[in-house]
Length: 403
Image (cartoon, rainbow, N blue to C red; front, side, top):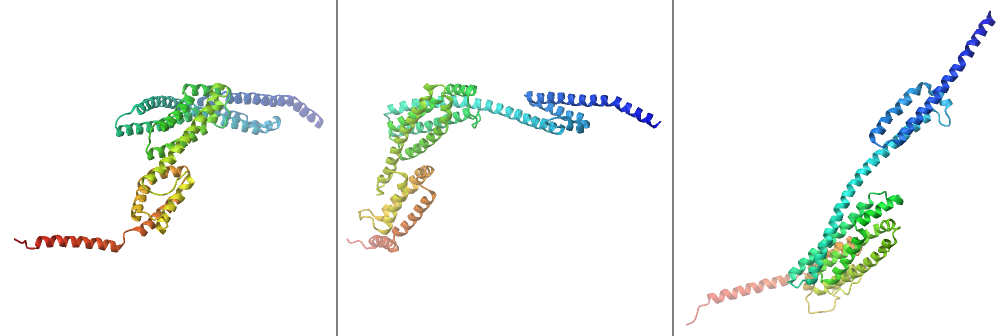
């Protein structure tokens, strides 16, 4: 009897075993199929709505096969059930972020495209106005005030146009990842936009206009100081973008040759503005009859001014007919009305002078004043002379008149 029972149990187990194997095999095959379907949907999704719907499918897949987790962890290779679900979630998160970034980038590119159009029109408009102003400058025969107004308007317009050009270049290149080497269609797209916006010709024309402006008019000291700063900013901006522009034109040798030509033009502009800057600065001191010597570079500015003040304080300056107090007043006028408001900001921006240098000169000016200010006895003598004059006038009025 016992042997009969054992036989029956063995028969039942033998009968059930193939059915159980078949069920596990189906589970494994269906999971792999569903997994690939969801993964493919993640990889092909292109809109926020599509990727959001797939997120629900990932959760549903995990919930559906969770009861078979123990079996699938053993049956799947090389990634078990847990690893497969984890990878699926990671891929979903990556695709979701990528789609979001693409959407934001597309909106930003559209905004920049509009900005490029606006800046291109602005550059064109300013270039036309500059051409007219340069023509007026050449033909100006009117009064000095009229000429000065034209010069001021031209300088302001040139500076605006220069800034607009590099704002335009920034807008063009901000549409692409600066850390990615541009090739193929991206490079062609950049080149097309650069040509459509006339970037190279605008940069070249801006540099040429500035050179012509320096060569064709007598500028004031404040004009030259500002033009010096503008030249340095323009050169720095050009050096920052010319490699990107050159890379965009690698396939166009004729255009690429314009890069060295612009470099040469900017170098010529720099030489001219340097000459004008030091000449105008020295004229400031010469016009005020202040003997600071000939200043030729930024490193000589602070020492030359400090030496002049020290010589006046110690009395080692050569004797002259000019009163020491008058020399002090002349320097203070130049220092406070011309150098500090106009020249010093440009000098500081370009590393010619520091805040410590300016503070040192201010301190020396105070010491100088203490040395040359009118003494008390001179003030008393002046008051005495005034009293005597008043007394003489009163005495003359009170004295009896003779027949």
